[in-house]
Amino acid sequence: MNPLRQQLLERFINFYPPLFGAGIRARRIDERTIRVELRLTALNRNIVGVHFGGSLYAMCDPWFMLILMRLLGNGYIVWDKAASIQFLKPGRGTVTATFHIPPERVDEIRTAADRGEKVEPTFTVDAMDEQNQVIAHVEKLLYVRKKNEK
Image 1 (cartoon, rainbow, N blue to C red):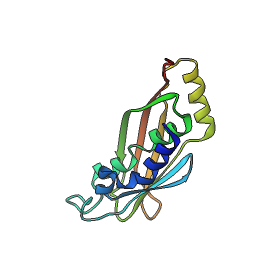
Image 2 (spheres, rainbow, N blue to C red):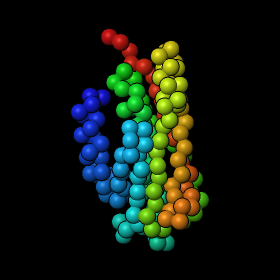
Image 3 (cartoon, helix red, strand yellow):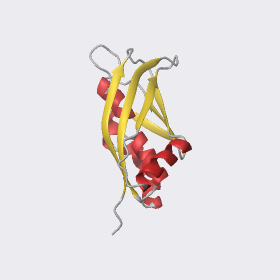
């Protein structure tokens, strides 16, 4: 992705309707880390008064893919392939999750993709409540490969 387009995407991601409508806000910490928060509101509260599970999943959905796309650059295809979420406790108040991909992991993925392999890395993140208790555990499976040179 072109760097200017990437910068604009990051600047306006909080206005992307599915995220904005759910009350999800992202803050870029650095090029490898994004912190996301979701406040409990009337628009994302379920019938029993806690965070709607779909909003919790949406909060965790795109970030590993977006971080890896930025770190690998234009020469690679990066897709979300699968995901699972395990709800551990009711989510009340503001919920946060921090998405981070270490440099060694990016190097491993890049090296395998450069050999022509289709890489399927798995990443995990915990959604935390205001008391720093894990309320949900999310696992994301991505698909990565080098683009074909034309």
